[in-house]
Image (cartoon, helix red, strand yellow):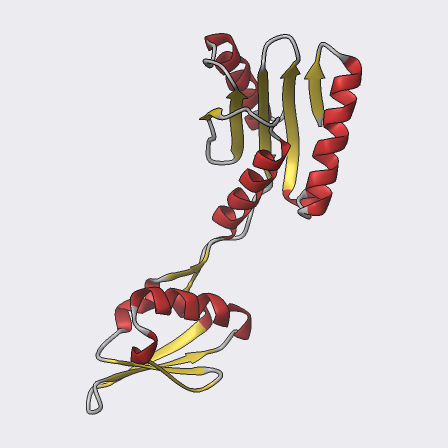
Length: 186
């Protein structure tokens, strides 16, 4: 972790703030590296965080078995991995009303009609979940009043430039340098 600041005490304070927020949100093990720039003279805060690799997306058919009963016109779903049941129900409730979902047992779900297309529905996306948690941390870290924000994130690096004035090109370039350094492992 590198926190750059012309004021040494300011850098130390921001390093403590960042570490505390990461500890509170249990993000330490999910992040490879972090670079931040704080300048008390110019109202700017730049942060770039490299995420660790996550597992691949989990699709519905990865954690459940589907069968379609043509005679009853019902799709029977047997959930094999209980850990994903809350995500499964959340996704189904977005697509169907609760009255359309019949759950006779904890692991069995019945839906009217041929719903075999649900097999490819994404149930869990660890990469997206980690990104959301890192953005949450960033918005807790940003100085109060820095409402002008430029998101410069890439696939594996979450990067933000924040200020309470117009964003200067030099700040964007600094963020681009951080992104390049983190992507190249520098």
